[in-house]
Image 1 (cartoon, rainbow, N blue to C red):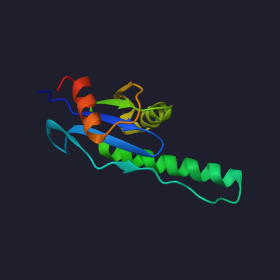
Image 2: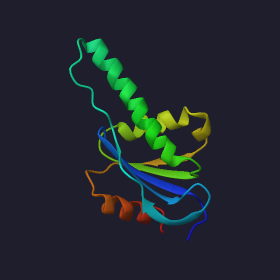
Image 3: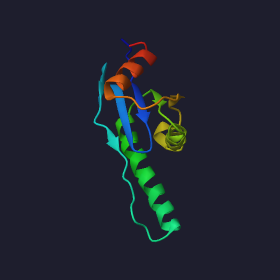
Image 4: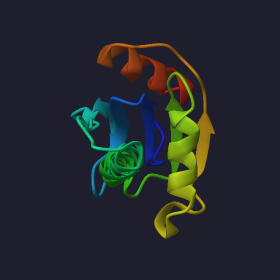
Length: 125
C-alpha cells in the first residue's frame, strides 16, 4: 500500500466522483467521497449573462472538487469531453496545486463503484 496521498476523479459537466486514499492526515485505503454536483443555471435574460453564470458555476464546482484534493500528491482525472482538461488547468493555476502530478484519461459514464475500481487499478492499489 502506498504512503502517497493519491486521488482519482471521474468528472463531467454535471458531477464529479472523487476517490482518495487519505483524509487530512493519513494515507490508507481508497474510499469514495460524496459526489460533487455542478449547479445549473436556468432562465437568463441574455447569452452574456448565461455565459457569465456558467463560468461562475464551473469555478464554484471546481473549487468544491479542489477542496477534496487538499494534500493529494498525485491525481488521476477521467471522464467524457474536455472538462478534465479544464479542471487540470484550473488546478495548475492554483498555487497549492501548481506542481501536482495530474494524469488525464477519457471514459464514459461510470458508477461510483466502477470509479473506485478504476482509480485503484490505475494506482495499483
